[in-house]
Image 1 (cartoon, rainbow, N blue to C red):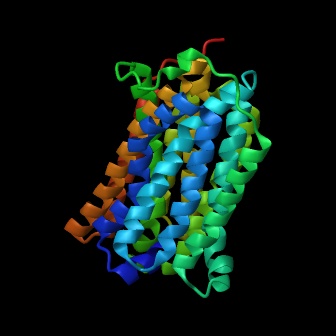
Image 2: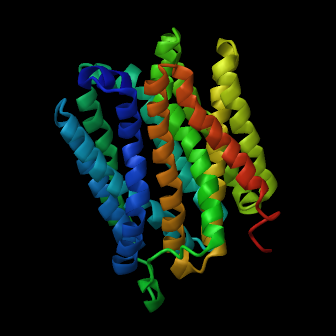
Length: 356
């Protein structure tokens, strides 16, 4: 929906970067608040609160073509997601402590399938149903979130909680948290940046017909890699060679997308989707494997704060570079830096961070 929003609200490229990066910034800034909420009421209840906020604020973004409303409701929606993010690894550790890698892959697959369906179906299916209104499309996609919150409340139970769960503030002296946060931030810069700037980049370079297939393949490209983690995450989470491989794949995919003919460009953007999805599962799976159960939510909150804060800066910088240079390719400079950062930061991990 970004081109339509861009047109209706006369956004600059810097504003596009800020708007698409705002939920990511809130994910980082509010993740610590999510950790506090988990420590106070438990991961399950915190997740229900987060889902309800995502549903209501997400729908309210479609209240009308008003920039202030759009930014304010995007802010609140980001807070809701930020609460859910540290809750998920905590619930995995509580409910399935012997299958953490597999369980992480399951819920991340659900996340990826959901975002892929939204990206792939909005233009061909949802817009005709809502008379081409981007505002109404936001309401449409908020309904499944509300249904999920209700089902989550009805069909799950709280796990027993101990006194140790009162701890919630991330340990900013933890070098492992910083290292993994940088790895996840690098992958997120690539993923969120391509989603944000593919539409305008392709329109500006005379390849507007590739917008829908590129976004679909970017997101669909995540699914095979993510499905593979259902079998592999338990064994591969935390391995240096695996994460280095995702960095190589992301960097090569970006190069193909911006330089190659049509079919190779689409192949390249699929490689980007696969690399970022695999990285996300590998990082999220390793957190409950290395942390004590009562510390998972605050370790996750710290990693997400670092990751999403960096991602917002990457998106915003992409827009600023485009506006300053009037060169569409300039918006991809932070994306290439993210892919390179993923490769370099992964190469500096010890061979595996999960001890047998």
